[in-house]
Amino acid sequence: MENAKNINKLTRVVLGLAIVLCMIATVVVISHWGNRTKPVTTTPECKSVVAVENGDTLSKILMAQGLKHGDVEKIAAELKKKAGITTLRAKRDRFEFLRNSDNAPVNKIVMIPSPWRQIELTCDDNGKWHCDTVDVERDIHAVYRSGKIKDGDSFYLAGQRAGIPAGVLADVYDLLAFEMDFERDVRAGQHFSVLYEENYSNGAKVDNGHVLAVSFDALRGNVKMYRFKKSDGTIGYYDENGNGAIKSLKRTPINNAKVTSSFSTKRHHPVLGFTRAHKGVDFRAPTGTPIPAAGAGRVIARSFNRGHGNFVRIRHNGTFETLYAHMSKFAKGVNVGTTVRQGQIIGYAGSTGLATGPHLHYEVIKNGTHVNPLTVKLPAISNLDNNQKQKFIEYRKILDSGIEQLANNPKWFIQL
Image 1 (cartoon, rainbow, N blue to C red):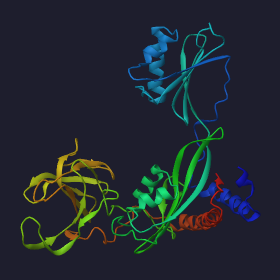
Image 2 (cartoon, rainbow, N blue to C red):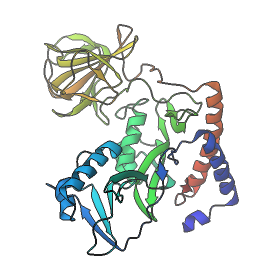
Image 3 (tube, helix red, strand yellow):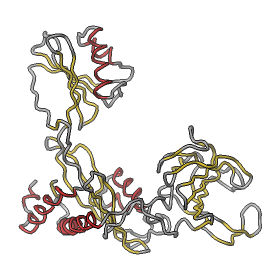
Image 4 (tube, rainbow, N blue to C red):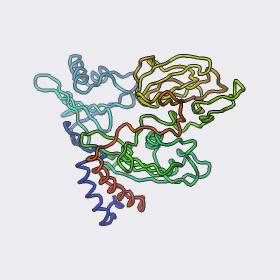
């Protein structure tokens, strides 16, 4: 906080403008409309805390606190109906039991399934239990981290050295995978930066939030993405000009996988021994590596043939299809006709068919013709209309000004 106080007048003006724009088009969801949002301030005379352990059940925990079987059934029904909770999670969920004194019966139960959500259960004079969901207020800091690729670096290694948390790096991978291949596009000397959220409660950091902005000096030019909330409440990532940054397909389904064989019209086949077209890209992956769908679509083939081995083919729209070959096995529930979402696991890497070792063979078919997954121009899922685009541009300029201030003062943060 001491560093935050040192922010100069220009920074305060920038942040003030950002707050105004956030009322129009916020990139960070900081309000929970329709829900009761407040920090928990209850200070009971007597409170006992029970963490859920392996083998615990709701009945076991509640009856150990002196509640009767009838109360347990009512509480279980309320948790299911009002909070959607049907099971307990060991090492994650915990309960707080409140009493007026040590020997008094429980008059309030607080279930805590996450740092940001609490379930309050109270019993009225008629013995009826009531369930209320409370969203815990977050103190959100936007922090900036940047780095440079060194000789022999992977992006992940460089990101760790820059102080970017692993979970945030995984999100950045997912975003940038729409525009670049981390095996072929990462070179020494490239710069990158990330603006992301850190969530605090009572002055202590609890976890990390969303990626707000990312920049990477890729081989095909600087890639920038910004998180933006539209007037209708939907949130997406957009480039500098307000065009959709999230494409309909990923170039590399498996993050950080090494390319072992590129797309080519003429390639010496390692098994057959003669030259023929290689209509996809091969990614090195140990047997059993999960293979996610590169985009949302419908499975139109799930079969085996001599060349591809176990393979899945997905139709994404009237233009694009993708194919995933040499799988060791298919994912459960993935059959012909199954609708899959982007990132859903459809199978596992292997070496079935004509393959010299475990890998993923990935093809992209555009209008019936095979194209290079690493270079084909991919359509965006959604773009902004002219009105929303103008609001985005205004917001982006102010966010860029804030990023510039943080870049010059890496210990500062923006409080959202």
